[in-house]
Length: 394
Ligand code: PLP
Image 1 (cartoon, rainbow, N blue to C red):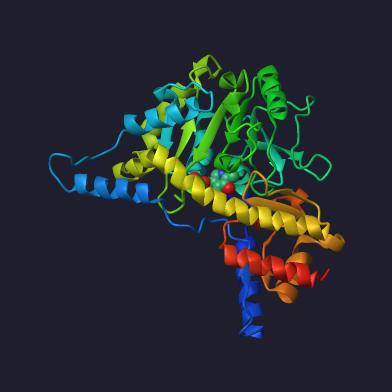
Image 2 (tube, rainbow, N blue to C red):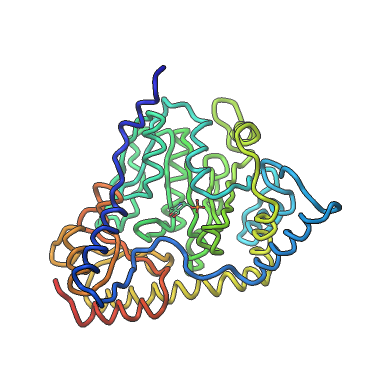
């Protein structure tokens, strides 16, 4: 018996446990001093009322013999797939119901999609990055090439045509950097992928946070993307579904590799290894896309974006370089005074009682940078920004 010893090559992730330990130590040493967290990557506002009502109705249906439902279709109920296709149509993207796969969230699908690709593929992953892309490929033993995000390219790396990559991860708006690719930049990626016969795995989990109408909210808004990209999206941040669990993945029929439509492979993978998302959850998800649901969830997004705007404004006043905050709930700042990510973390906690996330936890190129998030309460953001403006400990 042999284990998959690729797992032994994974780096232990101590990031959030070290943060938790440091905060506990600080609180122990400074009783009565209040800590404000701008490090949180989870939503804090409750579900929209229309979503709650839809799920309540679905629960009642499940309690009656006439409307009870057992196993859901693995790809999602038709009512939700059609609703998601209509959501895309409103952004000018035509999708058929069969191209939409409902899931229990983007994280699962981002990991599971790798089942349909050979482990011999070379994977291109931007750095800094959402760690799931890296770890899932290490688990499978794939060769990873990193693409440098930096202050010079505003953390929006473009293709290096000399590198041959088979699978490319793009996340826009980006976690952790908050940076968003423009239409032209994404078009360059699509051109690269088509030329090299690669597949782009496009993570649009934060698309609902894009405010600038000129920026793409789906890679399929770029001509030719249907033949080279799979898109992953989630209701986690859009509609507060982090605990409810629902996302969707789009695999266009036109995406063919090795003579086989990838839609067919993904359908086979899902029907074999996945048993669908709960009916109650899918009714809640459907409600998100109704006019009233879109209005109510947009109000939450706007609340977070006002937080982001306030953080960005303070950083601008303080002359601190940053990306994000305008079309994304993440703000990625350059640690002032040449401090390392962890030095800045310690200083912010000690002097201002503010907690953020050291950029070094998101890859080599994250060193010297720091992530703040807009998912906290308005009161906390105001308090934290006042402390930053008056403290400026660096
Ligand atoms: N993709 C990115 C970039 C994320 O930041 C997250 C969650 O933080 C996810 C995907 C996972 O989303 P879900 O909750 O749908 O699994």
